[in-house]
Image (cartoon, rainbow, N blue to C red; front, side):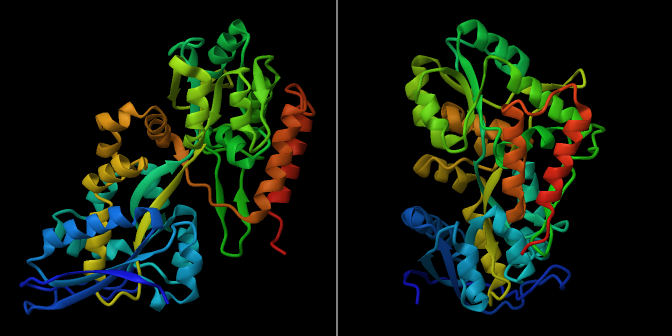
Length: 428
């Protein structure tokens, strides 16, 4: 049994009741002009409870003349939300936050209301529709909140991804634009540029930038096209050649997965690919030169292609079994709007998915968060099965170990085919 903080407000006005279970059902509208008591439950991370209570208070202040609210706030981490919700969907909160990679399982289990069906209610009460919510947030976060071309959650944050830290005393703003110029500057300074290649979370960034894709099937297997040709017209062999050329540069340092912070502290790096969790280490190592930006472009078939990345987001969804789904949708929209995303950043340094919030002076002043926001335009949500990780790690390590040669196209193709076969093998 979960413990809740109870927040109540009593007001008079119209009430809204919407009970929709999935996309494709009829769009609900306010059902009556009579007063109604509205009870809602909401879950959020333990460290966010005080902040979320303030958001609930402001929601009640905004809509308190529309209904009599009784809103209960409970503790549930975004990282474990899916497991708890799927234990008993009907008993789960009306509104809950979760990590974006949990979305497919929640949708397939019928645990999320389709937000597309809330368009009329959002327009009537919040003055904005689904299209407005999508336009207000980074495209990557909107993609993360969508499944099978339907919109299932409100983007809340964009704070889990990687970008480039660098020492501006050693490499210039011009140097960091491409891998070629960055490595040249590092070599001139007698330093290294570090990145983890032996991980599908990191090395997929080159393939994503070139238009390749991955996907998660209903049976838990992964779809992956890295050994073929992308929608952008590049082959996996060509991308791998580019990676080999980067890894073969004397100024490149291959870093083992999980060892980035140690290597930053080691003092050999002037630039490194990592995320916000290494901001303290990078700042300590680079001192007055501490800086960060989006990932560089890389040379692919004589052209400069923007390196992609894996972007992680946090979302807020509405329980498909909510008895007050319309109000739940409005509450979810409220706690994820521009103003409240600014509050999240101010109080918890959580990177906004809202474009306007991410463009604020405060975010711009936070070097790591600003770089993450810049890179998010090129990030994709990596939905993959458990068989994805070992083959992609082995493939990346074969590059940094020098086992693949840029002039051996047949060998590269074989390695790509072996990786894809391993990734797409059936789940045991």
